[in-house]
Image (cartoon, rainbow, N blue to C red; front, side, top):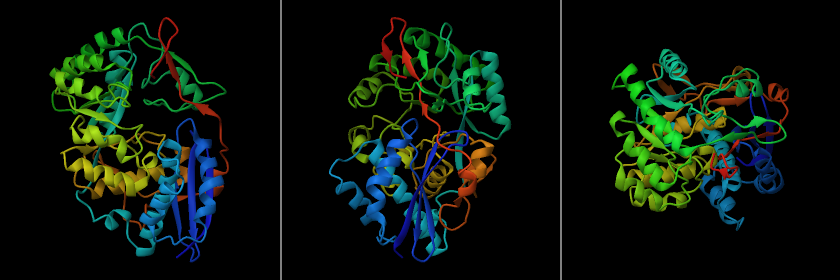
Length: 412
């Protein structure tokens, strides 16, 4: 069962996606997600120019060996571009192996550890009235846990808040998570940390008063705080019993989380910009986080992220895999199969793709009563309609960035 053909397919229905399609000499196909939000073509080149020539003729059944070969033979290791490319190959090989076995991938990973995956949705609003309406809408859609993102008085546009500009840039599709926006330059947004730290606790107090103590609530600080600011935020949110506080400070500084832990018992989730187990070594070993936020797409595929989560399980740390719309339906399916199989699953981020994306990617997952399930088709359960994908060529897009009032570029 050798790899006979490897195609890198770029399509842009509501947003850009990069998909690797492998075909074996006996006709089996496998899909892998290689989407890197706002830097998609870097991974396209890495795959087409460097990886694809190495795949042709390789035994598709040797997943671990192929992973190690692609990681170690390049010499230049790690990084989001390399690991997204490896993830695409790895995931496509798992898809092929599942089809060859006639089983869904989660069965090959040891079988289901649960009947479904609890997921959280993204609610946002510039005002409390808008936020409450968004939360109610998500509850009506079946979500049992809600991420709460709020506008801040005095700031025009910030991460995670659905806005008119976002609607215009994305063809009228509402996003409570801001994807890379189409255009020649990244959009500039404004930021003021002191205003944010004053405002957010009052918002969570209002949400708890309106929706009660039982609803799991999450919040994303999106790397914008210093360690002591992050500690202050975590402590101020303790009365509102968050499920987690995400990305409180830029995670490159691993030791910073020691300071945060000293001051708050609010659970911490980090890792969506990490891409190897080595990024996690210290913060897992010292139990500085509670949830691993990496995506299959950006962390070397199913093979490598499972190793990260097996390591985390030794320290009672759970999964919280990244899953907004910059993860394609292929990457989401891979996350569902992995989440269903591991013991230390925590929660799955789930943001619905648009109708055009669902036409390009034919999917078998189910969403019932707030729980996801990948389905029982052999492999990942996703097929790519290449004709439909061809209707949507790549469109240049960038993630926004922040500036402070004095003009300084700040973490977005």
